Image 1 (cartoon, rainbow, N blue to C red):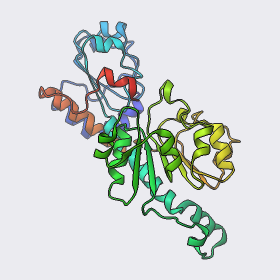
Image 2: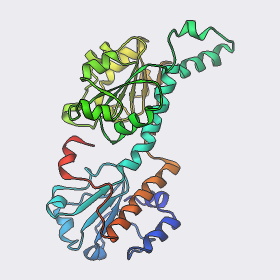
Image 3: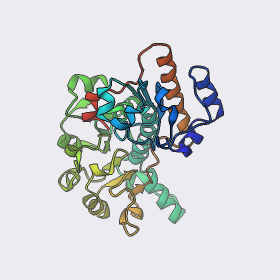
Length: 323
């Protein structure tokens, strides 16, 4: 992993916890494997953001490697087919990383329906009371419809956190069915129906060829007047030009944490539109939230050392439809 990730995610107390279970130099971090003579004896690799690709050449230098514990989300960037062919067990802290993304999303849903950002902006500018119900008829969260796109770890967590609220929840996912959606407290519908019928559309699908621009000009145009789009998944899910046009018209609102490109051009209207909240990819684990990921990773190491299966195992077959 990158050294900065080790320093923020594995402070001395966590490194000390690891030494109780495994033979490890708690002060050593490998940013690459070019000069790692001890690699031949490594049984467990603890990885995170910045880990080099674990290809056949690397694995040939690590004959004892049996497990990869990823202290981050997706393993697609470094776990290769060679790892699966070797039968190496893989774990990810994606479930831990899902928590802050889901929390951000739920906050965005509740604020969007309550029109908090708009009312706060108007109040800040005019510094006077107004008849908010007249200006925003029907605003609030009671019995509003929230559509979740993707029954991913994050999508499922969002539905779980929204269940205590009196909302009507919809789920669109081609790999889920009505029974699975009902178990999550939602009604299973097609994507077009969800987009057209929701007051808030929240994206939680992976970036795959088939999900590229699933929110295109046609679907964005089908959103209800005054509806809100939330994207905490991947920027490639949304046609940025089409979203910019719809948002600039004032017809829909947006809370966008990820964009295509990753950083929008400085001249993009999305930075300044009053009906758009644009944040710089902060929904995932940052700051103190990284400790949750660390705890999850160390728990997996403990499970491995206790000859128990990983609680958050990654299976090769699932990667085709996940992040």
